[in-house]
Length: 424
Image 1 (cartoon, rainbow, N blue to C red):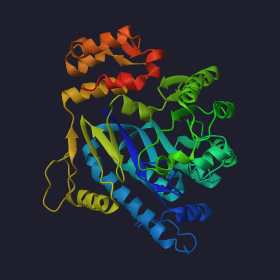
Image 2 (cartoon, rainbow, N blue to C red):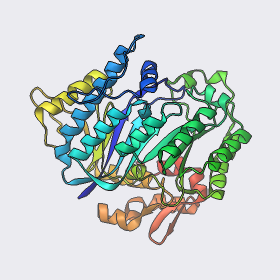
Image 3 (cartoon, rainbow, N blue to C red):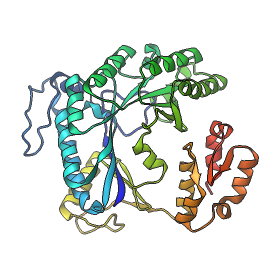
Image 4 (tube, rainbow, N blue to C red):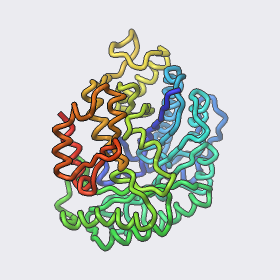
C-alpha cells in the first residue's frame, strides 16, 4: 500500500495574530463557550449532549463551527474510496486554532477517519494548540481520540513581545498549558518559537531558548518572523523597532548552537528534535509524499497532482455537497460533471517534479539522494543540474558525500539563494 498523510484545516481562532496571513478568522465567542463547557459536538444524528444555553450572541458562531464539522465529515467520507490502496501514516490538525474544538468533534472526525481509511497503528497524529485554549479534560479527550502529538504555539517567553505580535496568551498561560499536556499524558510535544520579533533583543531571544529547553520538549520549531503584505504588522511596521540584520543573524546562529548543546538535532532548516521525534507529517511535505487536505482552503498532492479546496465558505460547502452527491471515484477531474463541482488541478510536469525534489529535499539536513533522483526521473542529477551543482560546490554551499547532496553550514545560512538556483 502507498503511504498517505492527512491534513485537517480548522480555520477558527480566538483572534488573528498581527503577523498571520493564514486562512483563518476570529471567533472569540466560541472560545468562551468551549472553555466554559468543554462543549461536545451535537453532530447530525449523533448522540452528543448539548451543554448549556448559548447566549450573548454566540449562537451564530456555534452554528458555524457545527456546520463546518459536518462538512468536514462529509468530505472525509466522500474522498475515502479514492484512497483504498493507501495507508495513513500521519494526521495533522492545523489552523487556525484546532484546540478550540471540544473533544466531541475531534473524537467523531477521528472515528470517521479510522472507519474509512487504513490508519496504521503507529501513525503520528498532531494537533496544533494555542496556550489557554485547552483544559485538562479536553487534553485527555484528545488523547482518547488518538491525538499523540501536540504542537504548542509559544513564539516568545516575554509577555511584551507576545503582546506586540497580537498573541492571545502570556508566558504563564503557556506554562500552565504545557503542564496540563504533560499531566494528560502527551509524550511528544513541539514548541513553536519566533525570532526577529518587534522589540526583541538577542538577549531576550537567548533567554527564551534557555527557558524552553529547560522544559525538555521533544521537538522545537524556530522560525524568523516574516512580514507578510496585508497583515496588520506589515501595515504598522513603522510603529515598531525590529532587530537589525546583524541581530537577526545572531539569533539565527544562536538557535542551532543553543539547541544542539541541549540535545536537539537540526533535521530541517527550522526544525530540531530529540532522537526519534522528527515530525513525520512535515517530512512527507519535504520529501514529496502523498497527502490530502480536508477543510477550507486545504491543499493536497497525490501522484504528482496538486489541488486546493475552495477558500470561501460558501464555495467549499457547495464543493463538499457535490462530492457527496456524485460520489466521484476519480482522483481529480478537470471538467465539471453535470450538477457537480470540480476543483482546478495542477498536474506537475517532470521539470516541476525535479525542481521540487531539489528545493524541498535540500531543506532537510540529510539532503537529496542522487540514486533516488535517477530512480524517479530516469536521468542523472548531474545531467539536469550539473552546471548549477558545480557552481554551488565551488561556492562551498553544497557538498556531495556518499551519493547524497546536502547543504553545508554556509549553505544553510543562505538557503533561500541555494534553493532559487534550481528554479528555471
